[in-house]
Length: 77
Image (cartoon, rainbow, N blue to C red; front, side):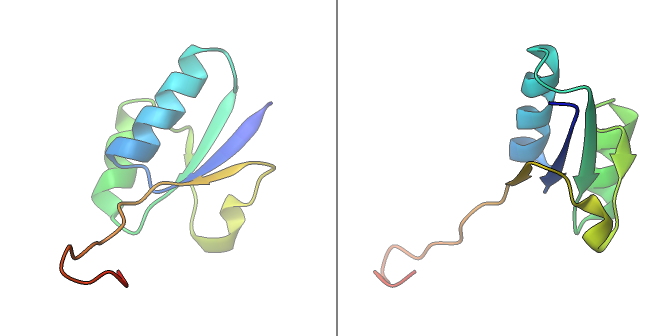
Protein backbone atom coordinates (compact mmCIF):
# COMPACT_ATOMS: atom_id res chain seq x y z
CA UNK A 1 0.00 0.00 0.00
CA UNK A 2 1.47 3.34 -0.96
CA UNK A 3 -0.67 5.97 0.75
CA UNK A 4 -3.32 5.99 3.45
CA UNK A 5 -5.43 8.75 4.93
CA UNK A 6 -5.99 8.95 8.67
CA UNK A 7 -9.01 10.90 9.90
CA UNK A 8 -8.05 11.95 13.40
CA UNK A 9 -4.29 12.08 13.99
CA UNK A 10 -4.34 12.32 17.77
CA UNK A 11 -3.20 9.51 20.06
CA UNK A 12 -5.15 6.68 18.38
CA UNK A 13 -4.79 7.67 14.73
CA UNK A 14 -1.22 8.86 15.14
CA UNK A 15 -0.21 5.64 16.86
CA UNK A 16 -1.87 3.59 14.12
CA UNK A 17 -0.10 5.57 11.38
CA UNK A 18 3.28 5.31 13.10
CA UNK A 19 2.94 1.55 13.66
CA UNK A 20 1.85 0.94 10.08
CA UNK A 21 4.77 2.96 8.75
CA UNK A 22 7.28 1.21 11.04
CA UNK A 23 5.98 -2.18 9.88
CA UNK A 24 6.60 -1.16 6.27
CA UNK A 25 2.91 -1.28 5.43
CA UNK A 26 2.72 2.21 3.97
CA UNK A 27 5.00 4.72 2.28
CA UNK A 28 2.99 7.92 2.70
CA UNK A 29 0.42 9.06 5.26
CA UNK A 30 -2.06 11.89 4.74
CA UNK A 31 -3.71 13.13 7.92
CA UNK A 32 -6.81 15.14 8.72
CA UNK A 33 -7.95 16.39 12.10
CA UNK A 34 -10.45 18.96 13.33
CA UNK A 35 -7.79 20.18 15.76
CA UNK A 36 -5.03 22.03 13.90
CA UNK A 37 -2.65 21.47 16.85
CA UNK A 38 -2.93 17.70 16.29
CA UNK A 39 -2.09 18.16 12.60
CA UNK A 40 0.91 20.35 13.38
CA UNK A 41 2.19 17.87 15.97
CA UNK A 42 1.72 14.89 13.62
CA UNK A 43 3.60 16.71 10.86
CA UNK A 44 6.38 17.80 13.20
CA UNK A 45 6.85 14.28 14.56
CA UNK A 46 6.90 12.75 11.07
CA UNK A 47 3.75 10.74 11.74
CA UNK A 48 2.06 12.17 8.64
CA UNK A 49 3.60 13.46 5.44
CA UNK A 50 0.79 15.79 4.47
CA UNK A 51 -2.06 17.54 6.23
CA UNK A 52 -5.33 17.35 4.32
CA UNK A 53 -8.26 19.70 4.42
CA UNK A 54 -11.66 18.10 3.94
CA UNK A 55 -12.30 15.93 0.91
CA UNK A 56 -8.73 16.01 -0.44
CA UNK A 57 -7.84 13.31 2.13
CA UNK A 58 -9.43 10.62 -0.05
CA UNK A 59 -7.26 7.55 -0.55
CA UNK A 60 -7.71 3.80 -0.92
CA UNK A 61 -7.75 3.19 2.84
CA UNK A 62 -9.14 5.53 5.45
CA UNK A 63 -9.04 4.96 9.19
CA UNK A 64 -11.26 7.12 11.36
CA UNK A 65 -9.78 7.43 14.83
CA UNK A 66 -11.98 8.99 17.45
CA UNK A 67 -13.20 8.27 20.92
CA UNK A 68 -16.81 7.27 21.26
CA UNK A 69 -18.63 9.42 23.74
CA UNK A 70 -20.50 7.26 26.22
CA UNK A 71 -22.75 7.78 29.14
CA UNK A 72 -22.89 4.72 31.38
CA UNK A 73 -26.36 5.72 32.61
CA UNK A 74 -27.77 5.85 29.09
CA UNK A 75 -27.81 2.48 27.26
CA UNK A 76 -28.60 4.31 23.99
CA UNK A 77 -25.22 6.11 23.94
